[in-house]
Length: 24
Image (tube, rainbow, N blue to C red):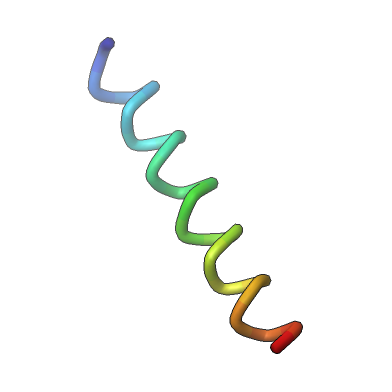
C-alpha cells in the first residue's frame, strides 16, 4: 500500500468516526 492510498483510507476512517459520533 502506497502512502497516499494509506492516507486516504485514514482520512475516510476519521470522517466515518466523526460522522458516527455526530449522529450519536
